[in-house]
Image (cartoon, rainbow, N blue to C red; front, side):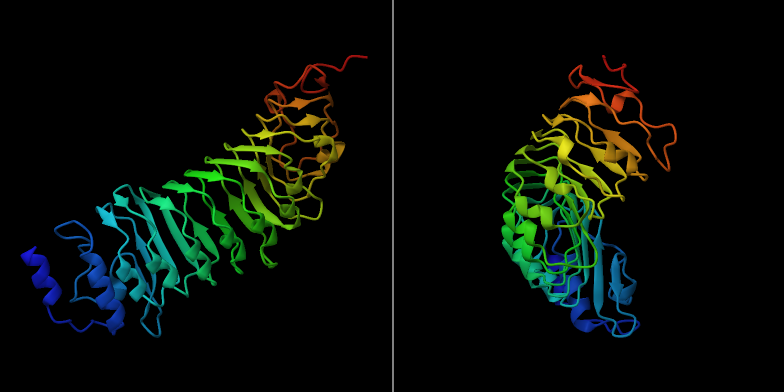
Length: 330
């Protein structure tokens, strides 16, 4: 403790190449907020903080714009992070000893575009104050111990194009506000898989042009047909291992679809013949449902000329028939 106090009281050393003084001091405090005799050994005051491992700076102003922490030092995210006022990228990745909750200090980083807290032991709720980050484009919080419901306020983020909350302990429904994301040129990627979410999918999500959707391995029920539509640019729809029950005969497919997995649900009806027009389709799994009728033929697959084998269709009622399953009965 005496050594730590001595280091904190040392006068600031001028940076080697003009590193922003305020950011350098904030990083120095950040360094010694973790329980380790010598955390981040490359972070030494005799060097420009822009050359410290995991630190990115603006080439002109020398302010710190990016911070990536992958070291497994025990501790929690310190409040001093708020002093890095120019941060655009913040990553805490693969640190199983990172604990505590997401601190309000992160909600003060108004320039943040990319926030990644993944593969840690961060816990608690997803804080509603993350909606204050109006420049946020990527919010990645997978593989943590986050719990509770998804804050509806996340649906108000005007620039968000990727939201990954997978592999947590989240409960409750998808907020209705997710059907009102502000329109933007780039479609949104949504991953809520491997949680304990439940309820029906808000009908308003039919309005959103998702790039990718993965809500697999939850407890959702009801209708998920709103994720389909010829006008959308979606390349992946994975809704497997839920309790969905809707008429698959009524859905229409986008030309961009590459991956479709609706397996392990209670989806009924027939497989629409229009699916054969999805020429980019490479992965298909409709098994373990209640589908019936003849499997469409005449696939126009660009990257799978051999088509799909029987594992894509198994464990539906015996009335699902045709190649690659058995022939249909007269």
